[in-house]
Length: 75
Image (cartoon, rainbow, N blue to C red; front, side, top):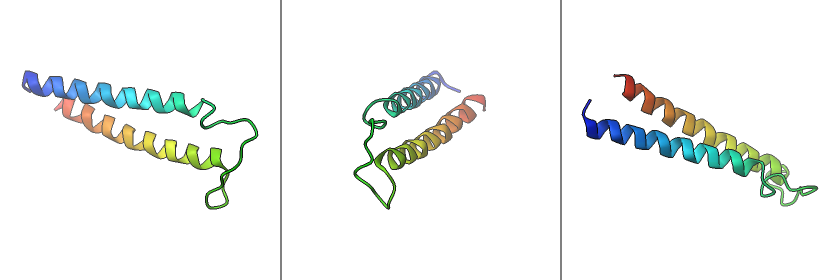
């Protein structure tokens, strides 16, 4: 693997990890866990629940991307 490709892989990994850390930090802020806040509702689910589901989906996508980056690293 060339040096440029290795640098790209490390950059992709760092970006993926940084986005994951930011999402995890956002999860525990008052933006998501607002005391006593259940409005607005979407599909009859409280705000906290649907935002948590969205963040979980994003973390799963980031995990997939991170796995693909590491698979290329081992080849």
